[in-house]
Length: 178
Ligand code: HEC
Image 1 (cartoon, rainbow, N blue to C red):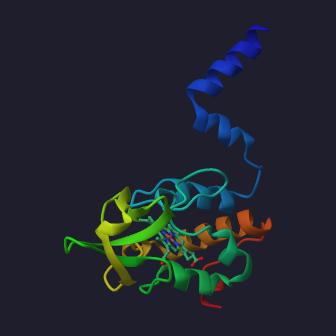
Image 2: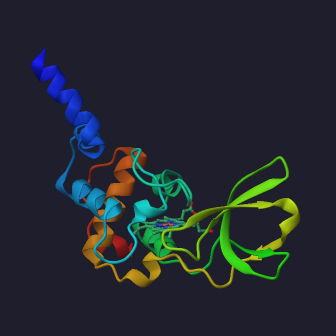
């Protein structure tokens, strides 16, 4: 009984730890990639804007789609991309603009993540105060400027592939060129 109580208290106090205990046991590379995904000593961690295994913010796209089909090289090119598909330049009727990604639109209101803020901030506008959107020309995906080492990218790709497909085969730095 006492032990059950202690476990419950730990689970309440440390949701991160409790979750880590539930994650599947896996390879050293996947664990390293997970660490890099969740925390970064070099600028914004991926989890600031992407959610994987229930961790992080779903601001950018769900990475399992690309990670299940793209080669490691194509994934790294996408991580380093400087063109965007989803991010738009949002123009308000007062003339202000910001790089944004739409979250929701209903009842005459529209929500955009404002990507000019770090971390991105959720903003809510009346439809009438948004003049329009056009293709983004200014916002860059943060990892493009972060300078991850090749081995770190291999570990991140290994992690994305593992979550998307269950693959545990090591992704080598050599694979990033294929
Ligand atoms: C500041 C927020 C932010 C951070 C940090 C971030 N991303 Fe992204 N990411 C985005 C957004 C927004 C998009 C969508 C870009 C677009 O419009 O095409 C995206 C797109 C992607 C894509 C393409 C997905 C697709 O389906 O098109 C990949 C892959 C990706 N990110 C991986 C990563 C990885 C790996 C990291 C960490 C090393 C990371 N991102 C860090 C916001 C972020």
